[in-house]
Image (cartoon, rainbow, N blue to C red; front, top):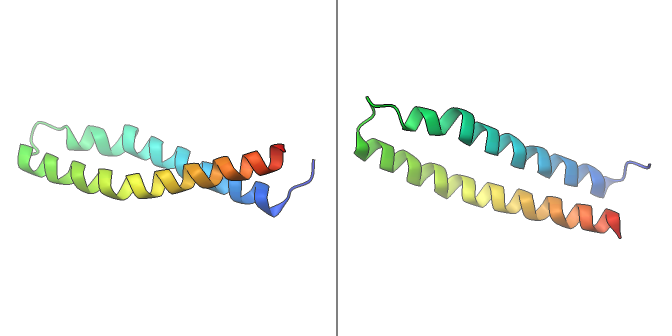
Length: 73
């Protein structure tokens, strides 16, 4: 198997996607849901997290899918 630039980009994009999912589900979501955090702050943090992550996750997932499809065909 040759290691092409397209495959490298696909793997890098996938690592960003997986790492982001782990960070959100294992770190940020439990912190936001703590009882001592006011609901107003929880809502503000969730909106910020959703806004930032939706851009990064969508683009990295799309780049990864395109690269893997290119390598597969």
